[in-house]
Length: 294
Image (cartoon, rainbow, N blue to C red):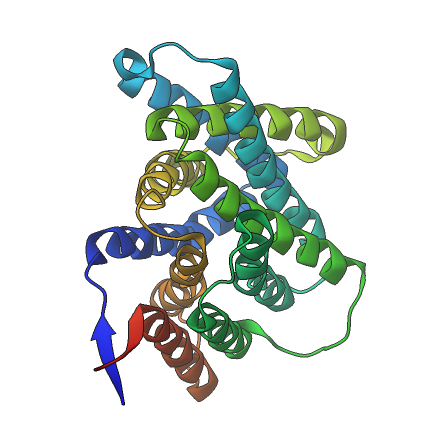
């Protein structure tokens, strides 16, 4: 006979849900910034720049000496973060927003396999079950016709791989480097990569209308969606395994849908409701601990 037992470290999982809420609201800020003439790469450059400056100012006394190992860790995590955003951005040029969101969600399935390869340890079966259930929920929540794969879809699938690598590498390096150092260094490297790419690809396309809305949107993305969100994510991942982290962060799509319904009047359909329910069921599955009772 099996007895269902729920785990108790809910604080850190709640923090990951809070991050997902912030990222979900970030869709709105991004839409406002793009409407006012900013390109996605320009937005990435600004948000990572703001985060780098703020984190340095706030935690300057806590940074201490930065070792070669610290720089290597920040470089790798920052590179994966940048590549995830970059491939997602370029993928959007050739595919629909709904397919982009759906294919990005593949990272919840990729994470357990990466952990399997790195740690040489089979993840619990519930990790695979909850990931697949979550993936189905994301599909219901985001996917619309037309189906089929194109170059944009392939680029987005690459983005999912890099976001998965970001989650796993964060969980790996957080055991070797201080949370604050890792967060700050990945922001600096992400800014550097974004800025260089922006200079070579998007600078001639930027035509920003300077008004209150665009300024507030950029500040929100820099302060909340980047500085606060990634600091909390990095901290929470010191207590939550990568497989479960991916599930909780995937609720970003749920909260993004909720904010779109509230602020932009998008229609709440049965499919959307079902998608949200299934994603939250995947979270419950990830929380359940099945143990044989004596």
